[in-house]
Image 1: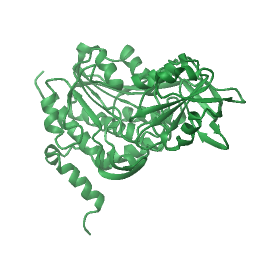
Image 2 (image 1 turned 90 degrees about the horizontal axis):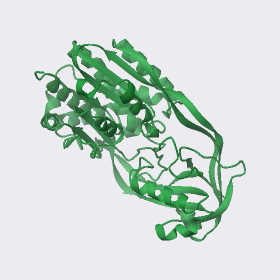
Image 3 (image 1 turned 60 degrees about the vertical axis):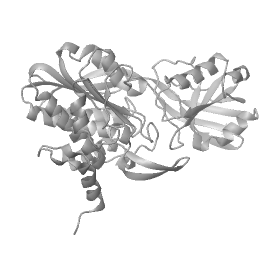
Image 4 (image 1 turned 180 degrees about the vertical axis):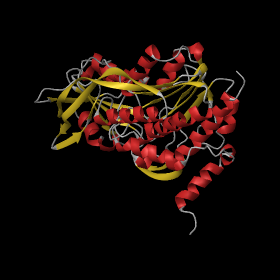
Length: 432
């Protein structure tokens, strides 16, 4: 029996990168990476402090312990909201909406008010006392702090809107959850998110000034969560490896590839470099502008002068590319989504250019600068860690409910993980 189509796709993917074709036997395997990906997704939603996130933390803790690390938990607190109802009633329809964090619920009876559409600043005077409808620009949205998004929310609140419905327009047409600071940047009024796929009736109703009822009920507050930090003491300056563990929902593509690669490095590095000083950290609180990462940097990370190399596996490490056949209509491709970025310091870039050849997006690494960074990577660079190799990206299912196992696989993760393994091996083999 000949090779399966899946096996042929994997062979073709690896063949595009010469460095992988000649990789040492210690290469990370598709099966191991895929197994860890599936285990991660199997824990369920990874919202910080939720059941899936806590189970993930326990799993990472045990895996690091099994690899020989001294492991500890680093506690944080984050907002949470368990929604009972989250709907916008429009005429006789009920549109499901996502509460925007930090969540301000409505009363049990909701808010029944006139809708007002905000297209630009000229509409602001009409928003007072209304439910403001904010169509956001087409983008792979990620955070409410993005300039255009934040500006729309803040303008609506300053204009006196009583509530906000923001329409996220992304590749899938689904509602895109938005990261947020732990404190509201738009005045603490009720705010929700709706995907563009179901937004047409709302836009028409807002254009005509119709009434609608917004209902957001449930319970919330603060809940505990924790980073996982593993240490393997050794000689010389430290090698630090980090990845976020949390996010909105299953996070298969957003987080799964980075988590699987993080674990592969955690097992490989102590064997390949038995005398190296190693620090591994799986961090939560990503949804709240990286509060877990900021805490790790503040109390647990080695000083910048003591770090030889920092590897950070961020969002969208290795996700599937898709044909866009129409609004919200996607067809899967076997190749990786190129909308991913790789950063490195000047002396590492030539190595990365060689080991990442043929890998969409990663084959053109950028200089690691604060201005060019995003997510946790920016915070690491701001803290003065210049020896950073990091990735970040936003795939088509970034922050939507359907970011499941269709969006990535071990076959997509392995070429990127092994390309970075070879790069790290070459960098750490240099004379100190």
